[in-house]
Amino acid sequence: MSAVPDSATALAPTSPPSPTPPPAGPLAQRYRHFVRRRLLLLAALLAVLCASVVADIALGPSTFAFADVLRGLFTPGALSQAQQVILWEVRLPYAVMAVLVGASLGLAGAEMQTALNNPLASPFTLGVSAAAAVGASAAVVSGFTLLTWGENLAVPLCAFVGAACATALIQLLAWRQGATVDTVVLFGIALLFSFEALLWLLQFIADSNALQQIVFWTMGSLGRATWTKIGIVGTVLLLCLLWSARQAWALTALRAGEDQARSFGIAVERLRLVTLLRVSLLAATALSFVGTIGFVGLVGPHIARMLLGEDHRYYLPGSALAGALMLSLASILSKALVPGVVLPIGIITALVGVPLFMTLVLRQRRVA
Amino acid sequence: MKDGLQIDQLTAGYPGRPVLQGVDLTGVPPGTLVAVVGPNAVGKSTLLKAVAGLRPAQGRVWLEGTDLATLAPRERLRRVGYLPQALPQSTSLVAYETWQSALRASRSEWSTAQREAAIESVVATLGLQALALRRLDELSGGQRQMVGLAQVIVRAPRLLLLDEPTSALDLRWQLQVLQAVRALVLQQGAIGLVAVHDLNLALRFCQHVLVLGGGSVLAAGAPATVLTPVLLQRAYGVLARVERCSEGHLLVLADAALPQ
Image 1 (tube, one colour):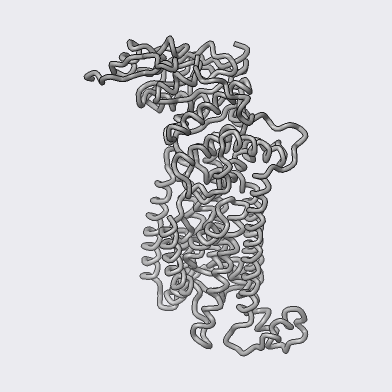
Image 2 (cartoon, each protein chain N blue to C red; image 1 turned 180 degrees about the horizontal axis):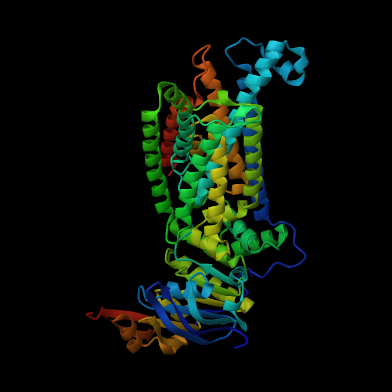
């Protein structure tokens, strides 16, 4: 027997909690204060996003007084017919689509980074965007049309199928026994190159008109936004947000370590598959309507992680808000950089996203 | 066996490479801390994972009269707390959130107040107040190991499986952690299986020792009777002495490694 005296009486016991809970201890109170700070940050992000959306609506090639914009939002009848069309059929769908697509990509990136335990994972870096581009290009080259709700949804549908195929392939590997997370990430990068090669092949065989459409699609544009498309993207985003909120605790536990999570009874493989399924739905739906938009799914989660940490109750909505804010600001820039011209938003996100990403990485290194 | 832990003919390993064959452990009453010792790659971690139900295994593991294999995986993991050898990941989660998520995942029936009380108690037991709201990526390896240990203990499992819980800790924390674990096990009538390399820690804190060698049990019983120079030579291939120090503790002193 040990010569160490039994210290059970000297140490605070870890007994199962009593049925009548005691009042919150000092540590719980400190943590609640800590959580309140995070909620304030989330509220601040939301406020900045609202301001950005208003600025996005107010900006455009045609002159539109800021007061008229605000008036038109609440009492559309106060505007002229032309102004109503500009506001409700062009600027508002544009701005709302930027928010929804940005939020979808931010959420998809955050979930992908958690599921694959890799801060570089995103729909863009793992080939999902490239696959969507291949699907869209195939629709353009083949001349396939699909008229639904008064719109030709052939290109978005094929882009969705392409993106879904890419994520299905990534999921298939994740599901296969023995495939480690690192292998899945490498496979995603290999997929990116394969889909890019397919895209070049389609561009090579396309006629000049189709080629122009493909190139424009791959630059990403919010100009394709309509209320029908907004309804579809918004519904998918809302459902995925609610779905991911139900798994926020399990995803948070996964961030502390895969073995640890498994030992709490979390079916890690199943959680990973379900998360990737959500990512595929979010990314494929968002990208299919606006074309290739890079870096939002990569940088949005990094910003949220820096501000809010990785408790997924705050990290997931934070990533969605950060993604939405990034794309909304990019939308403003796309209209403000060259007066009278709306630049494709994919160009802006890449141009702004790369230096922003590098700054974040270098800052994190300095902190470490 | 009605109370305590009993392992019957446990066989586990990897496809085409069995690591453990026919491991038995009997006579472990509630309130016992068992040291699992043996050379590297002998199967200490495999044994703990197999008992936890995280690795396929044949044989029976009885805990407090229940064959663990008859329980649903989730129920089994509620009764068993497993601390892996790998440290908790370096993430921007704060320590409090890792404990909270562990409880949310495995003790969803507890109320928020019950969870907070459990965390408060464990943090006080292990002396982790200063780490509670710090991010894991700001902590040292040893501090993260303490956070991981608290993640296991906070769930109040009946069987604690700790895979080298002191590997990243300094001398003071090694003593403090094993002292706390021993106290918890004694007080709650639980059982702890602790894989350790330091035989002196096993001698000092554990009431039972299981020595693994060649995929099976070389010896088991009270550390003072099991850990003899002959056994240490057989298990580790070393010339060693077991002597009593001036304080009365038994100490293993390794003198030389024998040629392979």
